[in-house]
Figure 1 (cartoon, helix red, strand yellow):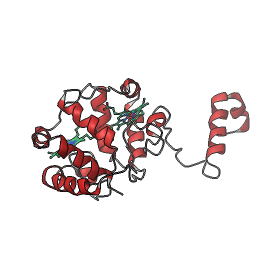
Figure 2: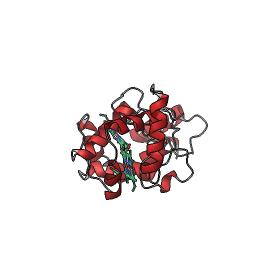
Figure 3: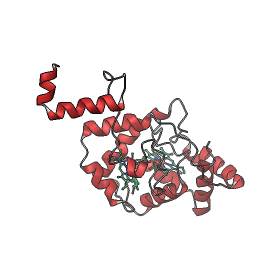
Figure 4: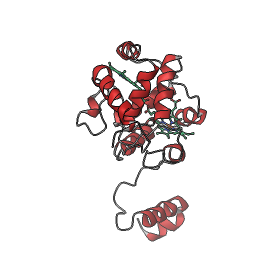
Length: 202
Ligand code: HEC
Ligand code: HEC
């Protein structure tokens, strides 16, 4: 583009400035995805360190991120803690959702750093193996994107309890009857054991 044209277009100047300032030397590469609107709660890295009520979404396969977002959009999932979550995704285009999903899927999931009881974690591991592991793979499993469920290892306890309660009281539709059947076999002690097990993920 010629210099004269750039001066004519304020948008173009702004775009170029942005490229020069954020990507020195890489001006011809695809710009990074803006996480504005999501980062306030989930962080740009998806670890949600600043908002402990928001779930960790780092390293969640893109297909599951999109699936979850569409569930909020069409009402299959309802937001209780943060109505703004549902509002935000309602006004986000499909294309942007796809980009954001790719971005968050590419972030590294680390341990939630929550304290856990090793004995309960061992009990939870057993329950997970018996009832949940067919569908919920750890985020570093090579087949995690093909799993039916969302990775739970490294997710925060407060969110896991809330999500499970939401299926129970109807704020979330169970996508699979098979999961409802398994959950029915877990009592509240079992849930706590599972939460401790998922927190033990490093
Ligand atoms: C106001 C805070 C807030 C904002 C803004 C927000 N989220 Fe959320 N997000 C949450 C909370 C809280 C939940 C859990 C909601 C529930 O199920 O009730 C959630 C759930 C999710 C989930 C489902 C996670 C899972 O494990 O099932 C995904 C994916 C997600 N958000 C992505 C996004 C993206 C992408 C954006 C930006 C377009 C965004 N969120 C904006 C707070 C927020
Ligand atoms: C037959 C497959 C299947 C089994 C077995 C299963 N789940 Fe799920 N689970 C799913 C699917 C699919 C979803 C995503 C549904 C949705 O979007 O709401 C899910 C979602 C969840 C969520 C919400 C995750 C999030 O990030 O929002 C939790 C928590 C969960 N499952 C826990 C469990 C536990 C605990 C067990 C074992 C007792 C279990 N599931 C067994 C398929 C399964």
